Image 1 (tube, rainbow, N blue to C red):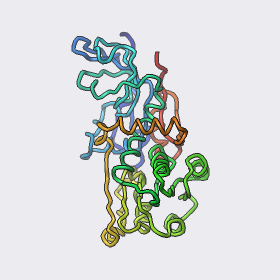
Image 2 (image 1 turned 90 degrees about the vertical axis):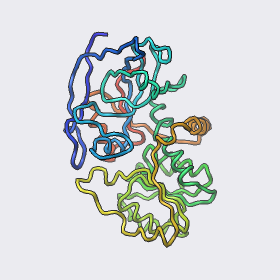
Image 3 (image 1 turned 180 degrees about the vertical axis):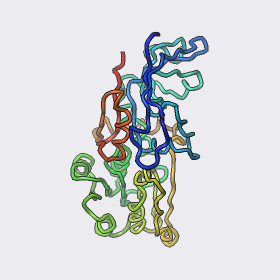
Length: 341
């Protein structure tokens, strides 16, 4: 297959805020799969962007190896098989999984097993959005780690994001009282009206600690945290006895040049017998059908609201990632490269 392949390579490891300057656009020849061994050629159609990607470029131990400098940036994505003799992934198949910031990539038989074919009728944006990894993160983190009970008071930080908004709505569906934290009037209004939260705190306008005292007088039973930093410290101040804190992310500190001090009130975890636990969604991928079944039911019944922020153009990939850390995205951040053939 003649042609060229554009790639965005990691140019250097960022210190502080990540931006387009940390990546390099290159053009190379079209990769050639070894079809006889079962390799397939995949054309990237759509990319997903998540706050955790900031950690993937750090040279430190994590749940995934760091992206090497000089390699294409790693990302979730949807692609289409354009060359194949592999009966498990015939030409034209739409697949979802970890791809890279490049127009074409090769999947060998081992890698191909990690790619999931999209269910019939599910477009790339829904596969990466409401039925994607952020919703799986919300589902398992809240239900398995948070262990909600009807009547619980649930606090969600980053509540207008792709993960937080699904957490908040699952909490509502499970009979909980839900308070969300988000930034800006527009996001807060969407949470109240579309997601039907009981209360919303605008961190750009309101003092979080003070508002939690007013809105959660009996304490917080479950705190699902996507932010960390001062927000986590404020929530700890207002946790109920035997409360559960679900640590999903800490976007407030992802781009700090030096680590910020941790919460100063961790002693309250002891005095109030609070459980605080982190988790990674890849530990639950074997149970993904369980989550997809419930999400499909809730979406079909009109019980879940979601938003998508879809940018366009290969040249805009690094700038699209930065939108997450600037707070400019509304809902799941994605970028479209091409339509399926």
